[in-house]
Image (cartoon, rainbow, N blue to C red; front, side, top):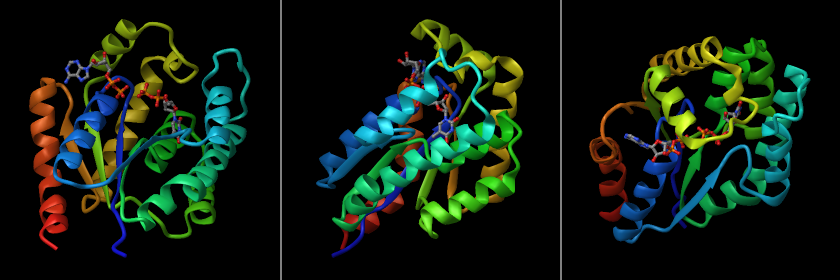
Length: 212
Ligand SMILES: Nc1ncnc2c1ncn2[C@@H]1O[C@H](COP(=O)(O)OP(=O)(O)O)[C@@H](O)[C@H]1O
Ligand SMILES: Cc1cn([C@H]2C[C@H](O)[C@@H](COP(=O)(O)OP(=O)(O)O)O2)c(=O)[nH]c1=O
């Protein structure tokens, strides 16, 4: 059986990842493509429990290496239980954040050594990577505004402006270095315009898939 694609949605908080992911799901299903929607950290019962621990503002003193290991513990479970089986069944997996978020937040945001992340990436993913990564990019002020509108802030959202700037610039650097895999999308446009540019980037994959 043909393997499905693994597509990740990345970017800072409030850049519209979840909104666009839902629209892509709808559009793909209309083309007869089977879709598996999931997110990180999370996506399985165990990984969602790890997510609660990671996001809770009550956990004030989380060592950065502990945080990193928890991200990858959740990811290992998620890959084994959800992502890899779905791809093997020929489904397209749409994942709200993945390992690029670890580089952006744990390396860029927290200052964890890049090599530490790369070691865990190899251990957990064993060469498995997204086929395509959509990076939703917007100035921090827009993220902040959309986060405020959404209400209570989680442990990462409470980090503030400088942290968010480092996250954004790490994402953009990764997108430049891995330009084959990444598509950078201007997330400041309207929902409809963002949707149009997402569709444009997905079209080659969709056409190749449905024409077989
Ligand atoms: N292009 C857009 N323009 C204005 N508001 C948007 C846009 N996309 C999403 N939003 C709104 O911004 C907030 C965050 O969107 P969401 O999709 O949850 O972002 P993320 O998943 O990246 O955190 C939501 O209230 C959503 O309705
Ligand atoms: C997957 C992942 C997420 N995170 C952080 C980024 C987000 O702040 C948080 C997940 O929250 P989430 O609700 O998915 O983000 P958003 O506010 O954009 O909808 O976890 C990391 O720090 N490292 C990671 O590897």
